[in-house]
Amino acid sequence: MADAALSTALRPQTFIERWQALLPLACILSLVLGFAAGGFLTSTGESAGTQATIALFDVVGTMWINAIRMTIIPLIVPLLIGAIAGAENGRSAGNISVQTLMGFFLICICFAGLAALSTQFVFSGLSLDPGITDKLRTSVHAAEVPTGDASIASWFKNLIPINPIKAAADGTMLSLMIFAIAFGFASLIAPPEVRSQIVSACRTISSVMLLVVQGVLLVAPLGIFGLTLVVGTKLGGEAFTALGYFITVHVSAALVFSLGLLAGLAIWGNLPLSKLLIGVSNPVSVALGTSSSLSALPAMIDTARDVWRLPERVYGFVLPFAVSTFKPSTAYAWVFSTYFLALLYGTPFGLQEIAFAAAYAAIFNATVPGIPGGGMIAIAPLLLALGLPLEGLAILFAVNPITDRTATAINVLANLTVTTFLAKFQKPVFIEGSEV
Image 1 (tube, rainbow, N blue to C red):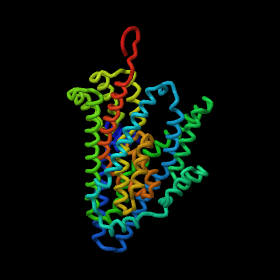
Image 2 (image 1 turned 90 degrees about the vertical axis):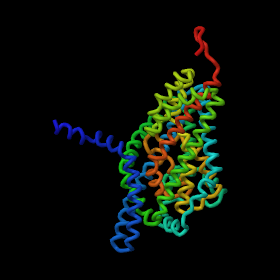
Image 3 (image 1 turned 120 degrees about the vertical axis):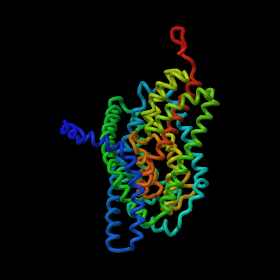
């Protein structure tokens, strides 16, 4: 009996599932231990053994970052093409799909715009020693990080890829994504059998790549420890101050945006305060507890159907579509994250870069894969386009278990907000004398 229990516990799938449950805590511990170990190694002096240890974990961290880089193109590009090419089907056709897209796009523009306008102010209280950030920046493998073009004119000239294959090899992700968008829309007017083959191929590649990504994320604690150890040797105690500030900004922003969404629901959704709070309490609680919009979907449907009495033809389409497609919280989170990494690594980041980050976050938040930590993969092209080091992903991924819970709550509130607004603007449908 004991042997059978041990055999079950050692099965690969069982072990992976248990490890995935512990992964958020393991990432946080790796972050803390990495910074602490880096600070300790710095205090021991520059002995040969210390330098060898730092070099070893630098190799480990860099290998993990390269593994993430390896997955970016074969994951994001098929996801984008498949989402566009497969959008024209019976379920998503009609006014409700267009209105849903417009609703989420407007919310994302508002989130990204407000983040862009406030980011310099909210981070004005975070000051890092320039000497420390210079040392941190020089520790990045600069040859592997694209720096982009200096002038706006040159940037626009190179936006359309002359050779998509070369763009993929060079890691110029924005140009490659423009090609993917053009390819996806061209697929919509291709013969049905051709479009079906394209969608099937993209979904197959995406499904396999999601497994690869999950494998890379399973060893995230090791990669995070290696990278943060190196960062800890440069920042010392300032690392914890900077991370605390970053987490505070994220949580505070989530609180502000949630209040805005609740106000919108109360005013334009014409919902009494008591019914509003009863309706959002369960979905938001599930979101905060699981960090998963998908897990909160049944609770959102219960709210829309039983508490707010919204028409099924609206919530039955909008909520599943929203959960599988949109991540509105990334519209502000990516702006704050890129600005924070720019401060951390001492990289110039002015109004032009902030505006670009906001526009990218508003448009491409739908490319986030529906897996834990998927947002960290999807933000990688933005870091590359802005010339920010991918090593910063380790820091973002490590604090993600904390910030992702509030971000998921924002996604759930945004889903309910769009659903309620669309329900108010829909014309009633009468079937056999009854209103639907």
